[in-house]
Length: 266
View (cartoon, rainbow, N blue to C red):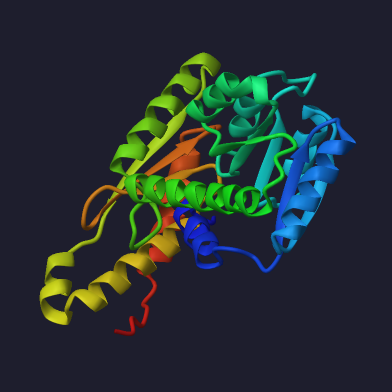
């Protein structure tokens, strides 16, 4: 169960790969030729994959990790800003630069307003500027992802925080009502946590929290939501329950996992 914060931190540590993976979404072979020549002349190392329409692009994004999508605003299957909306819906963390003609400046600005990081004018002969736009688009998106992670995730454990958990809880309730389904909410606290902190110090106490979160995560599914609400309180949301007995089974599983002794190294 990899958390979004862990994934974001991992990506930010490797800020730029030695070779960028770029997805160009355009039917035009001239667009590919132009962009490739500009980036090569600027000395940027990259590998470019071309998708001729939105469907092909969505399939590629699902299968491969890209550092940037360069999307033609004239793509027939997703004209205008729709292509930005579709990419963001599938993978919001992917930076997007839209490609437009000189007369489409207003449309390009609209694309940036709804989530693209920047725009390129087709045929621009300025390798350094094109390369800079590509690099900055990736940096901007990485910064946005880090800010979002800090706003919604606990830095120490990588778990969702109370704010995001509340959103997940409301969405889960809505789904359960529509499907006439069941869900369960566990609230778990660590006994005598204040005493642990006072006796052994903050470093050991933090180690206890990380170990606690790790053990709970080992007992649940990727579709379940575990949150750190406060210093020593955690919430666990379980969806798609078949019977109430499943809660008892899970509670026993959690109890057994948390009862095991552990060595916390300061």
